[in-house]
Length: 263
Ligand code: SF4
Image 1 (spheres, rainbow, N blue to C red):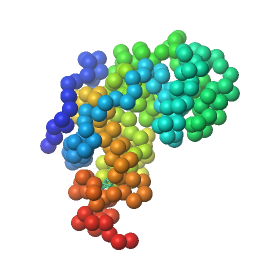
Image 2 (cartoon, rainbow, N blue to C red; image 1 turned 60 degrees about the horizontal axis):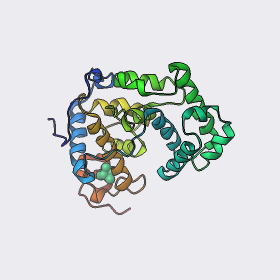
Image 3 (cartoon, rainbow, N blue to C red; image 1 turned 45 degrees about the vertical axis):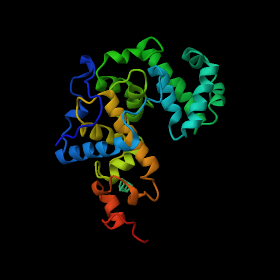
Image 4 (cartoon, rainbow, N blue to C red; image 1 turned 30 degrees about the horizontal axis):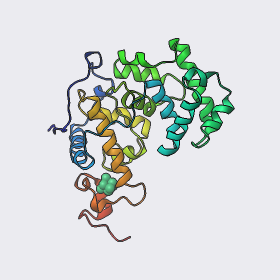
């Protein structure tokens, strides 16, 4: 039974309303109900609608997202600011010596890999589009825009969804990070062997096809925040988790009664 999300569920612009490929994926109705129940349970805890944390154009969001892989937000934020200060437009970074970019982003994980990758990705955008801009994605359907981005080597489902959702495009795409993925796996929304990449279409298909960008953003954010604050990688706090009655992993860990079992 559908559960009201508490969001503005106004549909996206007409160009983006055709059913996404992922939304056409066969979905177990019980899992869809559970996904909605989890969303409804977590939204009051984390305060939906959640404000967007970025107001970047989509190309800048792509740069930011690439910097953030396996890197703390504070470090990737510093690196992004360093790049913006050095290269007021991305053409400047494209033409810069790679060692200069690597030095500017030294605080992120694997700067020696990310610096040439950033240049390669900018170069690919320019070669395919004729300009250093991703603003044209606004005119595509979500799945079409994701496919365009993921055709660039080094851009996967998480990055493509982040660009569409977090940037000023504000398109209805569902990113899945490691925290979101962990909560989805433990609650049984996805199987134990489903990796982060393949989890994207599965988790998106469990949510209503007409959910707004804000609703999908909230869904990602609340599962991510829950993974960060309660469902920790080690020692999840099942005894104080609002999802315990929905979560097989939590019930196994607590003996089904809500109290943490002694090791
Ligand atoms: S009950 Fe435990 S394992 Fe399940 S979502 Fe909550 S914290 Fe995570």
